[in-house]
Length: 227
Image (cartoon, rainbow, N blue to C red; front, side, top):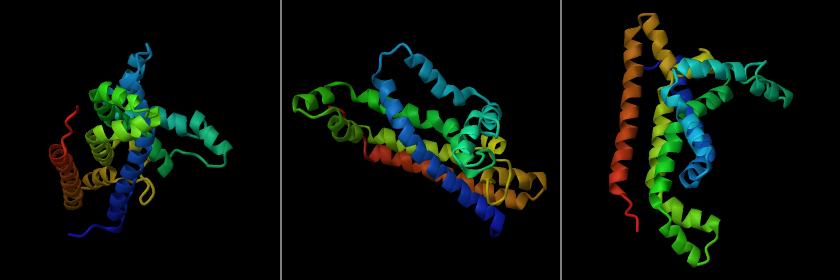
């Protein structure tokens, strides 16, 4: 059984969405995770709770409030229209924003744990060698935290692949534009097209399992021993 054009578009859109979301989350999540791992600020607990909120909040609730914010009367929607970018709801950009919020803890928490596990000794040694803070981060922190980065990328990517509630609320179900693979599966089940649903589900299952298997294998192969 071959994928239909709509199903193929949904699959490619899902992979594209996951890839872009991970890139966005690395840009946002890396400095945030570093601050959380090093800071003793009283606001740290509050920020950690906000980051972890998508883990316990129903996706439809998060999607609903994001839809309001991204819509034509929302704060982000108004800003986007004022800048000539049009509305964000029911667009790929809106899907990326929603996915970034929903997958944030899956990227930030592994990075935070990896940064915290390094400890202060390697950074202090680098400082005695007159390495600048930026040099210390790129030459000491990043190599020692590579497993954390790998875990963050894989978990963020895999989690975005299976999104349903958030992307449905924000993007609707527009074939070729905002219809991702999880929504396509739901559509097939609704119309009793179980063969197509089985095929898409199997693809998603194999893809997700392969990604997780890869990260566990690489983490075991390239285990980092901290000094």
